[in-house]
Image (tube, rainbow, N blue to C red; front, side):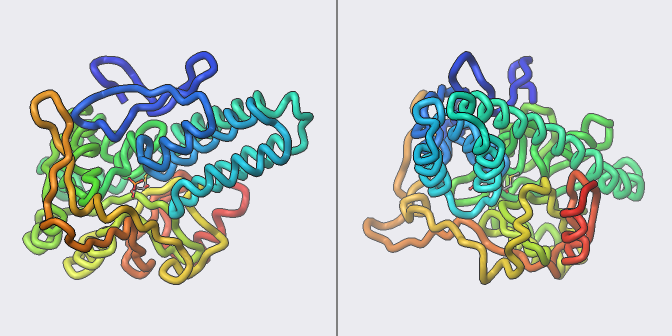
Length: 359
Ligand code: MRU
């Protein structure tokens, strides 16, 4: 993604440090932050300086490499894994990336572990970029088909939360087909759900679509069904934090309601995901996926810019009880198709099991 004419990934290395974009400041400030310890990486994930399933995984992988620099022993490795795995419970990419790095470095002598982990984290990042670009190519076909039917009128795509460049190392998952379509000259317009309480849509998706020049409109979270009833949404594309072996899709809170509205209105509901976001050990998403419960203060307050300052203001009467489940599960029956780097597939147990086989 280009920002002010310079190409950025969302995470990179500089000398011995890992550098991230501090997403808690977006869109009001564009600032980088250096992570030099595993604790820095854990904190960045926990307070959502980085967020989005693939980027959480990439940051955790680098966190493990940073931990191994300080202590490459098996005990050090296990302690770091535990600390990093506890940062956020729902996105499966987190433990997937940690376990991939551990499998790679465990057989190695202690002296070689940290640098091997660093390299493995780099490979996870590079692969994420390639995977998302391929997801974009596959999803582009879906958008192109609708564009052909609409004969030059923009294809209206609704997305929820931020499954964009900022949620991955580059491209995004849900946004990759959109960027590819826009770059191919296909007219697209994106309805961006603001995504309360943390406003990843209004803050992050709107920002990055704007950087890329993609026409978009931010809507409140409850507007999607209304727009679908009026034929103003051609397709929904969302991301996912964990998709189960039977095709249930866990994603940002509110995704399920969009899927219901899409089904009621015959609007295709697509989920874009890299295959590391599939948890083959879980079948029933509702029963088995841990749903992150975040601070009620995120519901009671809202952040915004006032002059040069970023401030938080209170929304509710003092002391109002609030609940903040951060994700929900959309059953496979409401999902039209999964867009993966291995192709577009039905959200069925058979199709998902086939992904475990070698390509
Ligand atoms: O709480 P967040 O901002 O980490 O939630 C992000 C999402 O729900 C994304 O849709 C999901 O991680 C997919 S990112 C490609």
